Image 1 (spheres, rainbow over the protein chains, first blue to last red):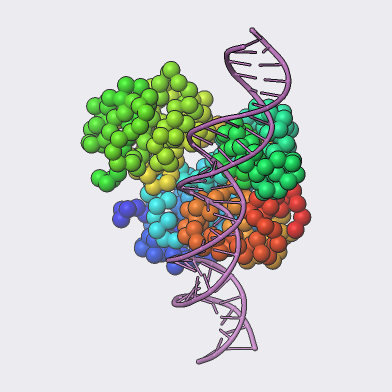
Image 2: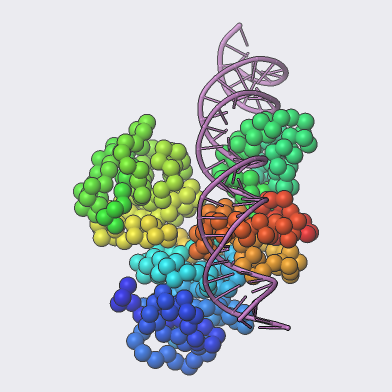
Length: 205
Length: 205
DNA sequence: CGTCTTCTTGTACCAAGGTACAGTATCGTC
DNA sequence: GACGATACTGTACCTTGGTACAAGAAGACG
């Protein structure tokens, strides 16, 4: 790690204290600089600015600094922005204010050829390969479920607790748990929160 | 790296020489074994068998060995198989006959929380994301929250557990719980499921 | 300088979620 | 009649979610 050269590219070019702590000796540069002095970087950290799109920023960095892997730092991480970053060639995407230890970990992964990508974004990418439109009808998520399971799934997706679903459907909480368990297994999701995302059309199964 | 325990799961349970060279002391097990003896693995290598689907194999490994990250080894790597592996929770996907140095590199990346994914597969995933559903602007649900709370709220709304949010933001699970509690109180919702509905635009707060 | 807000973290506890094992009843199919 | 699928339910247990009490650090503000 001591041999790597880190460039932090941001709007103002100054280094946050935690960046310096993570990588003593790292360079801080403004995105708008015409050229970057010194030894070529082995790793580029791009601190996103609200004033530019991720794709524009990455393209500019690419044009000026070449092919060193780039990790994007975002003040307000989100899946859309993450998608844009990876589409534009980033190798990592994380929070601007991550602790130094986390930054070093991300650096290690990316320097060794891996990706640093959030779990929810990865799931999003995987599910997008099915090309299912945002508002998933029950025919998709509900295709493998029984009628009762679909009822329970919809109630859960509206935010009901197991007790609430039991009251609503006139069955015991234990029966609701049985249905919920079967639904989670059939749809291969870990919990009711993810189930809700699928039923409400934020994910496809 | 010396402290990590590697399990190689394959049809016959024997270790290829290059696997042993990469990780002396690694255990070799048959996928069909009822149970795995010894110290829990820190990393699982699953050698795919033509006789089983990737999803079935990964599910079985998951059920028997728990949540250690899993890297899939394939004799005939391809994007379709790779997709299935990552969809089933794998953290890496590479060639069965990769050289020991490459295997150690993949192990490093995955043990540090990264992904090992092929370039063409990553491009495939990115190309599939053509349409992205609109999200409720943070100005509505996020107006009364602090910046950190909005970050936590968004992560939760994407389906993350408290542990997952903690990993993502580089803070402890206890801190995430503190933020989640504050968010639930400010938005006057009973739990993270309802929070998710608000953030994703299914409810007004 | 004192106060307040925000962020962070600890231990502890209780409720809810989810899983496991086990079982009965009904209905449709062979 | 046997069998499988579905719906329903029990006890038990473990994990996660959420709350309570407590506390320190840093930055902004009067």
